[in-house]
Image (cartoon, rainbow, N blue to C red):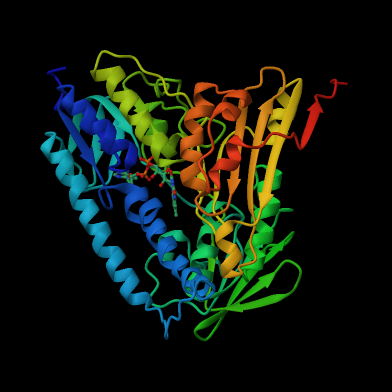
Length: 460
Ligand SMILES: Cc1cc2nc3c(=O)[nH]c(=O)nc-3n(C[C@H](O)[C@H](O)[C@H](O)COP(=O)(O)OP(=O)(O)OC[C@H]3O[C@@H](n4cnc5c(N)ncnc54)[C@H](O)[C@@H]3O)c2cc1C
């Protein structure tokens, strides 16, 4: 590959690109990464990490409230948004520097600029400079979308701006029913805003297990979040420093901030992909095979830009597999089954594997085990909340095909349950596991009675 300036050019210094660049360099490749915004990408700069920090901040309110039942008197508490944002920004800057240093230590050259594909082996930088590369990896991630154009959409913010608001809004209207919408609803409500969540579908969290969807909605409402489904925002009007969100029903909601969390789209625009002959898939992302190869042999794509499973650990795994396959002499595919995922809403959701509906469509028989109870902690605090644990079992093989949890610690529990599900553990394996008492997770190994059992209906 000595005819080239570098062996690998990575476009995008996010979760997937950084991992691919580092591992390829460790395999001996000469690597260059272009990043047009900040090294670390969405997850580190304006996604998972700052989001989780805001989630932590928002949960102190419930801690203070719950403390009273346990005998604590907490004098006067108050919250300062600017302190939170400043501290969050400091931590993000530290992480950005750490990612940059990791790449540089691995011998990766970083160029802080936009880069586009000029041809199968050439990348063009914003200043016109061209770099010849043996391989090009497109890892440009995704960006928020706002759905169909509506009047006044320029007044709406996305999650990108939510991390940098000058002040905590008193009233927030959030449009969206996915995980980002729910997480920000929980963040703003916990910090003290009045929140209305608007979703055009029948219920929030489309694609999640139906019990989870119903449970989360009911619990969010108990926490004071107004959830309105079956309508959408038709226009946004400015009223001085505030906004009026005009609903498709004709109703109006006045708010200090209107946020759209209506989905994300792969960053494929103006990247030179068409010119280079890179095919786009039906899902709107770059079309790739199981080794992340595009239709052009020297160009690969990983992470959100391929719109497969848009989560950080998946982008990282795909980046690592690419580097091992192309530069490590170890062809590696990524298994996209059994990807655990969480919604850090209030209440929190953790889930892995099939939903009940998916299992019932797939298996000849599906067994459902469900536990719903008031968590021990809520007894003295008096908080009105319930925890849900649900196992979806293939009734023919006894394998646990899905695990769904709503409540405190759900994400942490599901990460561990995902090991068992990935290994193909059966319900009998779960039952044989000794309980750890008193915990919420012990319910996973003590649910003995089926809540329901369904035979698949014969196809017409
Ligand atoms: C609010 C929010 C919360 C999230 N929470 C979670 C979570 O809790 N858990 C989870 O697993 N995932 C979460 N995600 C998703 C996660 O952030 C993404 O799946 C992950 O970042 C994808 O990594 P990536 O490498 O594909 O792309 P990205 O991390 O988006 O990186 C792409 C990079 O490419 C750069 N770039 C784009 N075009 C160019 C170009 N032409 N030239 C140079 N640079 C370019 C961008 O600036 C960006 O830095 C969240 C996302 C958001 C928005």
